[in-house]
Length: 339
Image 1 (cartoon, one colour):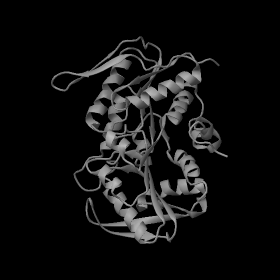
Image 2: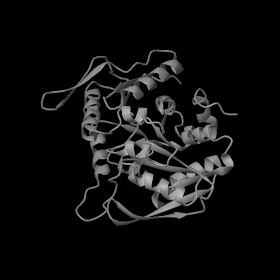
Image 3: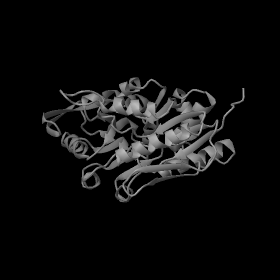
Image 4: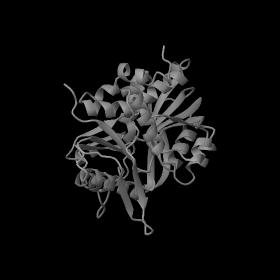
């Protein structure tokens, strides 16, 4: 049955390289030009955001590509205002492609008189006219329930598994997947299952918020190549300390696979000077020049999986099929040559 609308992309300023790469891949897949819709997203002198869409979008299936990374508030407002502009221009459907969903760490009340900001952001997105959300590795899976619209949460673990099988193809028996805390066990277990590796946990004990007093390794990591798996790397303090603890426990090497490279403050310097042999990030957040120049930081692309997910949403086919190796491997075959 033919689809009555065309998929069209529009990008904010948060991660234009990712948006352009998605557009190129969509053009290749469909055989038609899928360049992002021409628009200007500017600011008045006082910082107010102004959006003007230069192309007709009436009746079109619109996809806004905009992670809400640093500066989180500016990028979030861009996303909301772009959505409002599209809604008032009679777009058929508006899907927010948010590779990194900011405010996701505020998903519950940890103590009295604190907000649940992730829920507030969900309400704002829905109120702006967004009818569907496509994101990757939400910090907490229950955030999907904060929305009254469909949410497709992609996972980086299948991509990381392809990378691991390529980078460590002759050392697979030596691998140990490590969760940097108890809360991330499910994420680490998913990667461990995909590469058929054992699982270890670093148990953190805090005396006060933001300060780790003690780390204990649960599991035998002696002579293992440890792969730390997490969704966010912010200042990298805890990550680098966990890597040092693993080495102190006899690990052969330590590598890290992190979905969202927030990399605030001294993060790049800490990683560069740490015992980690490599830190692998995705490009859900646009890598800064210091990240690109760091000798032990690598970037793996998310454009292939986001492109296919966008096309699947547009034509009404399964998005969860992209979690399976037989579906994901072909769209990454130019990057990973699997035997």
